Length: 156
Image 1 (spheres, rainbow, N blue to C red):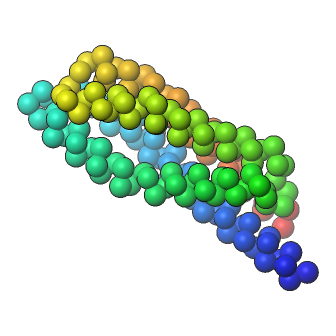
Image 2 (image 1 turned 30 degrees about the horizontal axis):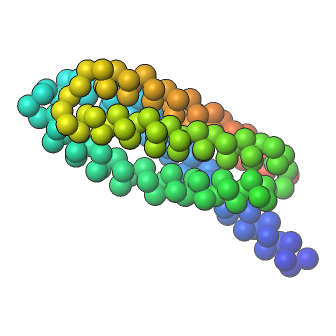
Image 3 (image 1 turned 120 degrees about the horizontal axis):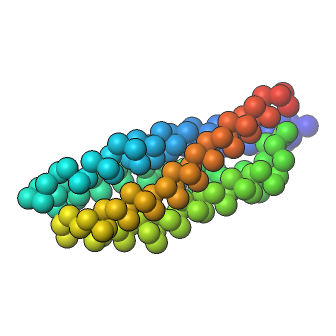
């Protein structure tokens, strides 16, 4: 009995970390997609390389810990979802995390690499357009984890 309580408590704690990381990333990606990336074109060619380098460094320090926390906890939740949460939903959540990581690694990071050499209109447009993949995936995760929180609340 004590082991079940510990496991349930641990699962709940893991879920709360996942909830916080996911919702923080939803906020971050919406600001990046709607405000930040579109403004790249207004920085000016003379300052863009320094701006891109500063952006990449600063945003990585903010989002990388959140992304790692989200990835790790989503994996653990897929293996042992909280009581009241259907396992399939936890696995869907993990797949959505995979979408954000794959898009980041294979689309957005290379585009930032191109932009690090200087402003490139086609790279900028591709960044704004393809970043919708992450924006939609994280927004869906946000809805999913909020629904999971509701299910967890109801199960108690």
